Length: 220
Image (cartoon, rainbow, N blue to C red):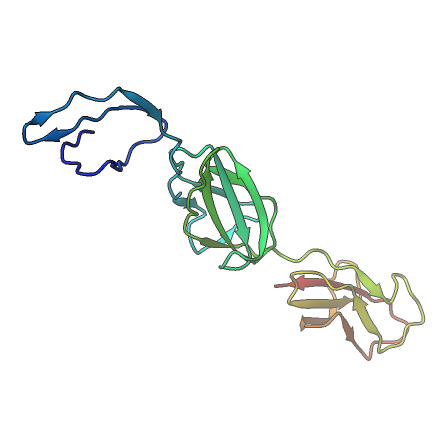
């Protein structure tokens, strides 16, 4: 850089980071110019990392795997990336934070059918860059787990002909399906209700002295 129009005793320049620069000054007037000052040198500090651009999962993605891989473009002067994942778009409810030396992050297993927000920024030993834009994705809805039956106990006898059947609640189940049959293969089904929203159901009247088999599964 060279400037011969400076009328003050200081001058600001925009320089690149991590470089050594040499400088000197001389004075001028209408009759001529002086010799240059003694040469000096200085080294600039590392530059601020640029704002990363997020890559995947793409913004507003749905049916994303429960343990997604986050990626973003690498930025110059970033030696470490800071990753934040939140349940809120203002990033105040963080559920995951980490640092990575590479522009990639494997998340642990997240909740099913949940929307998450994420952002990344680069930093180095001297500077911290701006955060990326905030993106979001929604995880896939997985089927409910297996139901555990509670009452009546397996193999129970002398049960009323209008029994109340109950089972444990399971996560991700919006409804339950209850089936009752007179055989273990459930080929002779005498009761089938797939719209139960509670964890119990009274059935009957059933036939007296008959062995029944029953099963429940969750639905979403």
